[in-house]
Amino acid sequence: MSGNYNSLQAKIKEISPLADYVPCSAHSVNLVSVNSALGTPSNPFHRQKFPPWSARADACKIFRESWTEVHKELVTIENDTQQKKTVICEARSIRLKLERFETALITVFWGCLLERINATSKKLESVEIDITFVIELYEALIHFVGETRENFDDLKIKGEKLSFVQEYEKDFRRNGKRKLLPGETNTCEGMQQKNGRENFRINTF
Image (tube, rainbow, N blue to C red; front, side, top):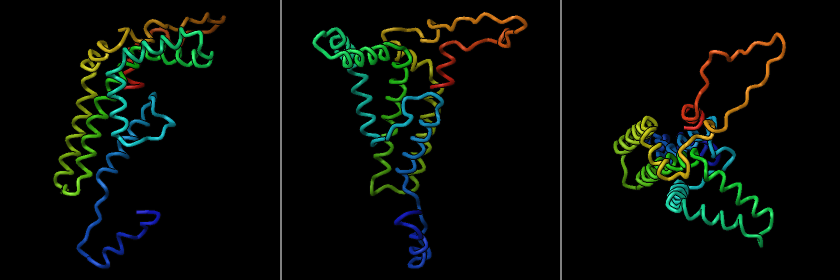
């Protein structure tokens, strides 16, 4: 322990030698979940403060259920000549992100995870929970996360139903080939470049 609770475990041991320190199970889940999200090379959570999982889960669920309505409102704002240019530009920027297939995929993925993490966190916060049930909840959550990551194709199908497009941005926005200078060789020649699907799986999913 640290801060105001520094050496608290030692003081408890002085009073009751049989007392063992057990870390907060719900807090442990939060720490692991946050660091897992921040450890992804490309994700929407960098440099953001994390509110309670319930807030994240509810927001993601509402966003997914109101996907079409949100898009329509953005289009309305973008075409409203009475709006300020900054507002129109911001609406257009959000709309373009919403129209990316990757945005729909990550929304489905995080909606699925956040709902389960939030449900597990609430159970771990129960005052009547015992250490045996905590272990079971941990193992179930670990299994669920691993299983979800393996079911990429199932999430892709759900993303296709949500998205306005079914093509990865990388697939229709190919990088142009630079003309080689005299004496220069193409070091990437013969190497298979990642397509949009594999790029998303590796760098985001």
